[in-house]
Length: 338
Ligand code: NAD
Ligand code: MG
Image (tube, rainbow, N blue to C red; front, top):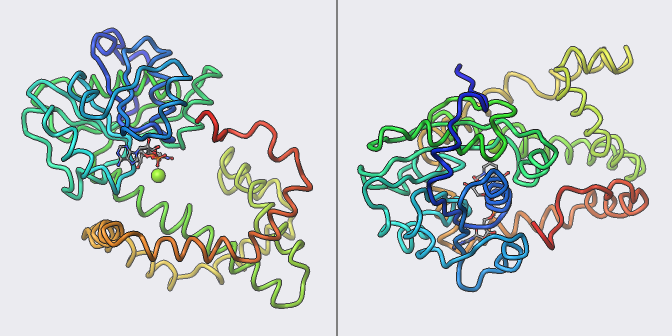
């Protein structure tokens, strides 16, 4: 595995290029501000009715309609949601994809599954920060950075990797490490991680644990603390030092329960189902299902979202968090500015 740092990047060449950041959401906000603070020429491309225009302009960034920002730029970075990227590209970006330009992504979804097919005369790269935009901005402003993945899909210009590396460095990734990968590897591992472990697996695990305690007659507040609140303490230990170091920190009783009971909950059968999820990702079945869900107005998406919003763990949690105001101090997300 190849890892690059700031010393390997040529920021000078990137500073001469005009960069259009399409979309000012989680990643657009972070990347546009970090690039600007690294001395790059940035314009944010937004929809006519964009609610983000005020936020971008208040941050001192130039804004233009998407088509115009893309037309004037050498590097067009697509930071709109993956499910709308193909439409935005077809409507406002495709026409300005002239020879010599660069098209960038922070996730390989649209390119790897073929929803966007850029012309062969355009270099296509990916710089994918391994963290949400708010962390990308927060780390940058404190002089650090979030590690990034770097990949090249096609490169008629001959310097897509250098351009991507400089881009990664300009958003702070070079301070932490820029790891070389491929569009396929990034896309498939990213989807798998968020489905099986990080988001899907985790929230299902938390809810099942909470329900088990509550159905057995324990106080929902206790169940919330045990199954959700304390998750952070354990994850922080895992993040710092891996599994063995986390086990060093917990009690021997907790460690014995961990080692003997964990595999009862997550077992070979679970792993077989994980392999099933991976196969659906690799075949493109998941990607097609998700695009279809969007074409159909996201009905199921909204229904599932509402089911969790109305779940007892969310109601109990809101009440408990209100009693712990320090949890909200220093929040990374401030919806008024980012
Ligand atoms: P987001 O949902 O936070 O924001 C997208 C922004 O796009 C919106 O705020 C809006 O400004 C704009 N937008 C939405 N619909 C649009 C349309 N039809 N036309 C024009 N603009 C529109 O998205 P995000 O989470 O920043 O994701 C952007 C990309 O970054 C995706 O490819 C995603 O996979 C990738 N990524 C995200 C994260 C993350 O943690 N959020 C991490 C790594 C990579
Ligand atoms: Mg991810």
